[in-house]
Length: 342
Ligand SMILES: NC(=O)c1ccc[n+]([C@@H]2O[C@H](COP(=O)([O-])OP(=O)(O)OC[C@H]3O[C@@H](n4cnc5c(N)ncnc54)[C@H](O)[C@@H]3O)[C@@H](O)[C@H]2O)c1
Ligand SMILES: [Zn+2]
Ligand SMILES: [Zn+2]
View (cartoon, helix red, strand yellow):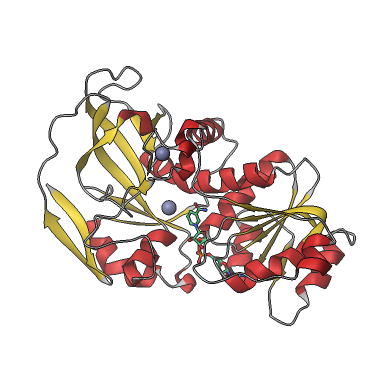
């Protein structure tokens, strides 16, 4: 059976790997049809992802078909199609017992800390499959990216009409935009890449964008666009510690700031004049929860999330290996590349 392995940073190869055994109790044998590529894969490829180890079969954004199920699996059957919640949790730790399955103390993300779905078939816990009869494999593989934005907005919890500023218009920032909009919040997007802001205005239909030029003019522009109130909720999806420290300045009094982007650097910010004076709430956002997957599938089925602008590139295994260095460059215009398993 064919698989793609990231042998070491910057080196993919196609390998022959063993067929999975029959599914055990609670498990499903699935055929992988589609794999979405995301920032985590790009960082893993560049050797910049702290949780990534090598060699690794990547792939955590999956559109699958069920081939067989093991004992005790009732909600999934052969022929079903679904998205995969790729966050493997232990079901025993303090987080899991309280329902915080997204931040299990023994968490493993498929394709990051253990082998993922860039292969023809694999065994998965059946409880991690979220089914749909309507969605295409491309759409199913997009659900996980959307789940990250869904969870971030759940953390920030904006109310209708509030100003939500999303900093960083990469796929994660765009997924945040989808859910801010659904709530009826007024969404503004900031980025230092003009091409990405063009995409936000033209493809996502969000008119209020702010270009970060590094000259400090962003705050004035935000104030102008929000009648001086600034943003009730700011979601930083840049992964830049500089931006994350700066982001507090964009919060309204009593505002909430969500860090959905990830940095390994220190984040510093002014306490007394901003954090304290405005009584801000700072929130992290990691992964997503099972109900987020169910909700997103329903939203796409109902046409309330349009996946059409999202998927910009397609390739098979060989095509992906050849195109990968290009997909790393924002000027290629990649939002979401989908890999098909032929
Ligand atoms: N919370 C989670 O569970 C989770 C899951 C997946 C990814 N992530 C993280 O989300 C972040 C974003 O991922 P992505 O795939 O969208 O990345 P991306 O690199 O495609 O997008 C980041 C965007 O931020 C912009 N940006 C960077 N620095 C900036 C600055 N100082 N000011 C303004 N804009 C700036 C870039 O121009 C880019 O458009 C990453 O840190 C990633 O690791 C988090
Ligand atoms: Zn991802
Ligand atoms: Zn756990």
